[in-house]
Image (cartoon, rainbow, N blue to C red; front, side, top):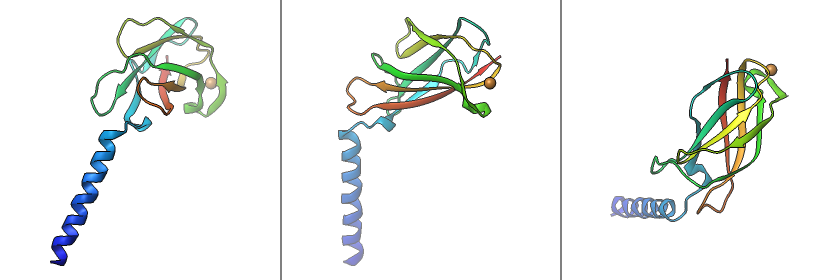
Length: 131
Ligand SMILES: [Cu+2]
């Protein structure tokens, strides 16, 4: 009997956690990834990130990216930043930018995003390699 009631508790806990997962999408359900890790070092260099819903694996359209920062923290130069501006993208879930890279090496693109249907702000860091 003891074993059986313990199993019941486990099943209830599992059902509750599954239910919670289905009911609320969380910021952790989204991920930004590089469209191409390698980018050209220099002015007017394009780079792009893709926003994915981890549960469905599908790209997420209509997100608003803000407080973006491009810095060389991957190469221990976190204070070294690069100017960048958003440019139009035709691919769903892909957010494109143009940057003025000033040094070859690792660049981290840090951002916050408002995602449709998600109340909480999503944060992302995507690392690129300027060559
Ligand atoms: Cu640097």
